[in-house]
Length: 310
Image 1 (cartoon, rainbow, N blue to C red):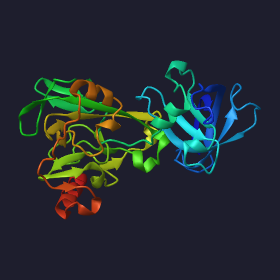
Image 2 (cartoon, rainbow, N blue to C red; image 1 turned 120 degrees about the horizontal axis):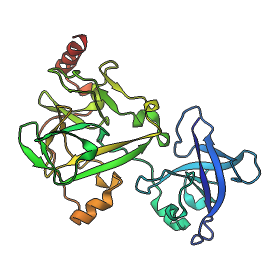
Image 3 (cartoon, one colour; image 1 turned 90 degrees about the horizontal axis):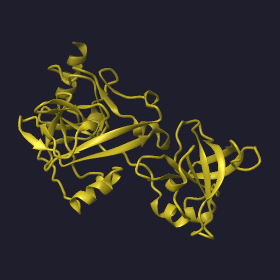
Image 4 (cartoon, rainbow, N blue to C red; image 1 turned 90 degrees about the vertical axis):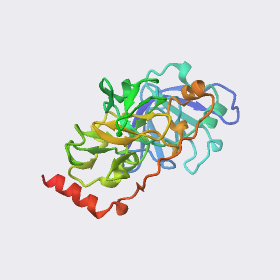
């Protein structure tokens, strides 16, 4: 079952402008066999040092989603009514990490209700992925706006923006959140140079095609990374250039930002708007895209199998 411990606050829809009431510290669990909270499923709470009142396990209601605070804190939102799919049906509980400053807590019910969201995972590189620059390789999280990166064609392009998102492992089904690890050499010709870890929908350039990483999983040299390898969360980064380009990640050609899920899914979206005022649409390059495993050409599968055997 999923479990989350933190400071508990509750809000009353009948007096939506009233500040939340802190109700101590407690642990929330669900009643399913999986290890994640899924929207709509039942959840229960028990007391830590005063939370939920009487020291006994107390029914709360259903899990509604997370409060998008920009990635610093992980806020879970529950309703008191088990049959609820709307925040308007009962008392609302927000559970924040233990010790979260009160200044970070939403001030009233309307603010919380207006910002409720479920987590969308963007297409990105995980922390530590090395990106080629004229001076050598740089970890993606250390790139900044204006840095120059190398393309697969041997050209140079400036970084226009780096979007980042903290992915919290407890808030979605595990299979949705597991990134892909492409083992060193799995693609042939010594590529990637090191293990390359990225989200499933991030495309690599292989044999003239943009191939989403998740379609290449073979259970041996290209695998899904178990969420148990992460300490509850991981952070992903997407490099935006002026166009839809192919840059080198661990030596492997990989796409830059393209308008699919959108920049608003990144935690630093406000930074983008502050820099550029409005979003700029980036058109996809004219290359075939492989977005499902059944579409991977047999020739590519044989090539990857041969690399695995080697």
